Amino acid sequence: LRHKTGSVIASISSHPNTFEGMVLEENGKRTFLLANYTNQQIEVGVDGISKKAKVSKLDEKSAYRAMYEPEDYMTSPNCEFKFDQLITTIKMRPYAFVIINE
Image (cartoon, rainbow, N blue to C red; front, side, top):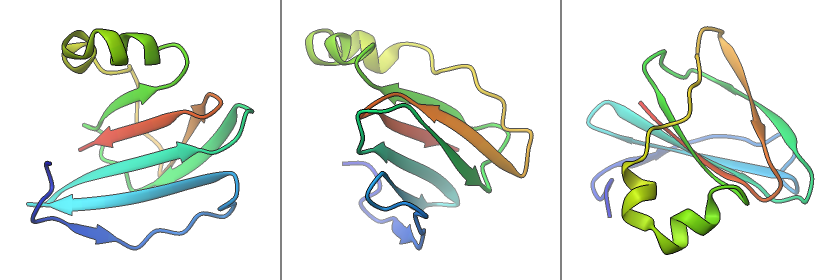
């Protein structure tokens, strides 16, 4: 696993039955792990994300490729996303998992 020597940064979900997030930090770089627990699309506000961050999503659109073509999925380009606001709103599909790497 990556982040073996990293630490977890405290984070709080305003709706813990709907969404949860975790922030890992290692060597000055952060990784945000976001999970939608519902069968509905949700919008999540996340603050403190670097403008250089890269976003990867795992949801019903990408799950097949992630399971059956994992090398292709892992090397595919990240989602296009601009982090130009203090708090960024991210749309998450039902049961989606989002990784944001700085």
